[in-house]
Image (cartoon, rainbow, N blue to C red; front, side, top):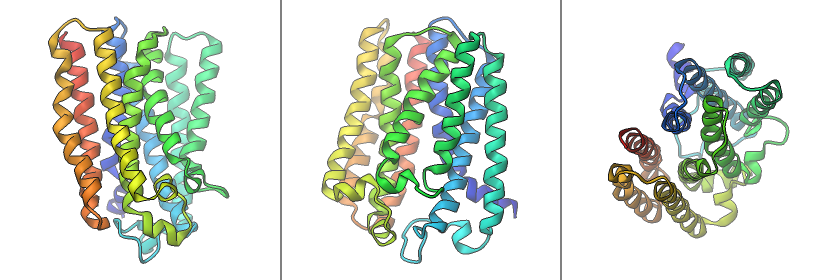
Length: 297
């Protein structure tokens, strides 16, 4: 049974959540602020939110019929009957409560004013709501083409800027640029998933952005996300340049090129599936190289 819950939690998605809060923390460290306790709790909260989203996705797609026999992706635990819908619902409530507990503990241990603490707690509740209602709930916004926007806001802006601010209690406009990079690359991961599932989502009535745009436009959109991520990181480096090592993140360009070509040429869903993981790992490599460049410089 434990293996089934590990499968439902989708551990392969967790490095992306960890990476995006880590880059915000590294940026704070680069500007002279860092706390291991704050970083640990930020990471824990991000991981719990990701697990919550994954469990809610298993439950929501089953309830709304997106996990049907013609779907080409990996078999889901609720779909297969390995975990019952009621068990999954209880797990969602438990992990949601853990998210709130972890997030509140994190916020109250920071040096923020009471006003900003309340603001971040409110953001935490919004994040929990968004994680659940992406595909679960009566009107899941992921079924109306809003998943990409959610990923940009939570995996990009909130993860990077939020983790930076929780560490430093200061604002720096240039932090928006790496936040945009992380958001764009995370949206690219989702876009591959949605392109893969276009036909099965059409059958289920799940209107992802890729389905709304059509495959050809979704491929062009994918290229724009990859380019936006690179340009934003490059602009940040130009503004804060001090050493050539900061450009080491450009090593991901060949991997991004491979990913785009695969998204463009691989028509069959199962042929495209490995490149979803490849894009997630490329995003992780971007975060690592970008962070190494900052720390080394």
